Amino acid sequence: MESNSSSSSVKKAIDVEFLRSIIENDVEFEKELFAIFTENANRNVEKMEDAIKSSNDNSWYMASHAFKGASASIGAFDLSRILEYAQKHPEENYEQKTELLRKVKEELALVISFINEELLSK
Image (cartoon, rainbow, N blue to C red):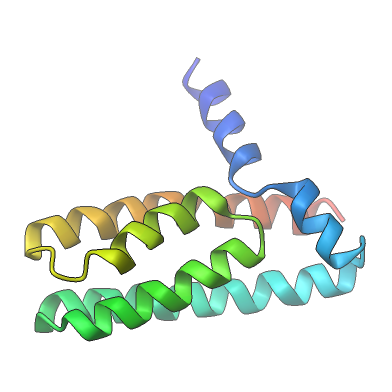
C-alpha cells in the first residue's frame, strides 16, 4: 500500500497537462527546463537554510519568492503553495521555518523523482 501511495504522489508532483501546454511537447526544452529548475531549486533550498541559520527574514523571503515562481512555472503547484506560505510568513520563528523547509524538501523530492522518471522515460 505504501508504494502505491508514493507512486501516486510522484505522478501528482507536477501538473503534466499544464507543463506540456507551455512547452508544446518540446522534449529538449523540457529537459533543459528540468535541469535549470533542479539546479535553481537546490540553490534556493541552500539560501533558505542559510536564512534560517542567520535569522535573515529578507533572505528567506527572497529565496522562497524566487523558488515559488520557478515551481509554478513547471507545474509543481503543491511545492509552489508551500513556498507561497513561506514567502508570506518570513517572520516565522526558527522552529516554524525549519518545519516549512522540511515540507519544501519533502515536496521537492517528489518533484525531482517525477522529473527523473520523465527524463529517463524519453
